[in-house]
Image (tube, rainbow, N blue to C red; front, side, top):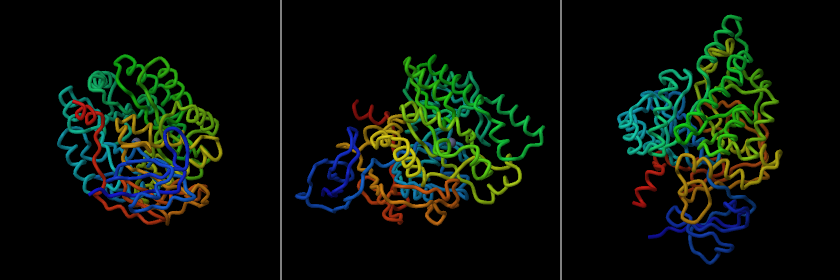
Length: 458
Ligand SMILES: [Zn+2]
């Protein structure tokens, strides 16, 4: 029997703009968008006075299962996500065993199936697999490969230049994107050695150990390889305007490259790194104010296609190890729940971004990048009914008590924000409402990318 739900009375942000619409949901899918659905019987969700955005699609998360379940997990991480208006996550292969073959993929898949509230896509680590191994991962439903260009994450070997070209040649053939962490390995090692030799342990030494050049050079090189191989490249967590400019120029000449940035590179600068120290240590580093301002230009002009959280939490004790020595602070932040409200407030309320562009930045584009369109990423007929109902006038301050993550710290604590997610709906089901997470762990669905679309059309 068809189950009908009507989200009524809200201003709806569709792909063509904002207008007052009722959304009719049939069995978890958007069945109709109409000006007045009052004649339709069904469960009703009142969105009067609110704005309805597509559920956020965060294609850059580290939810830490299996090995680092003490830091986070699919349950707590996605509870935090839905409380921040996110309904789909893309999970990086980081935790051990590193997702690199069918066996490790199956372990990750089973844990996500068991615990995730969000729908989820999974990636595998590009660490030098051969063609058959890459195709096997693709067939298993991996929606992207992820490569580190530097040694930065324990247990995750970097991919060297020949390895990256070889990987991209196969990925071009099967049209699977490569997501890269772009930092130059040699320059980074030299920077860390330089800070050690100088006896530096202060927060800004972290930024000085990996200055913009470290990222910019690696982006240029990865883009060159994408141009050479024809592969799709997505540059994760771009923190420099120069890096974004390289992507913009290459994309204009037909190179298949997109890029992302994260809230930490848009909302924080060196003064925050200096103030927060270990609580703001991440890679790439948070940048100088002048870089932050210029990075925004590339967000507003659409060069930076997506915003991702790079949510990678640690326990308080692990982070406290960096209080006296910034280089003892593990690299990673806890931002998934606050990301969309904080970025939207700055982008729309202070920098003039339209709500439609915010929908593209936070949902439509990231879905496209990892092959989840048209099922995910927009409020449109036949798409999954993934919706976030926002009260755009609500003013609030970020506190630890609001967070559903396993270790409730965030560098954005204390931030004053206008605009709050009131209700989050995933495939028609209310998974978050007014401060309470209602979605059950294990209710999230596994998403495959274009493989699925190709199979359907075969
Ligand atoms: Zn990451």
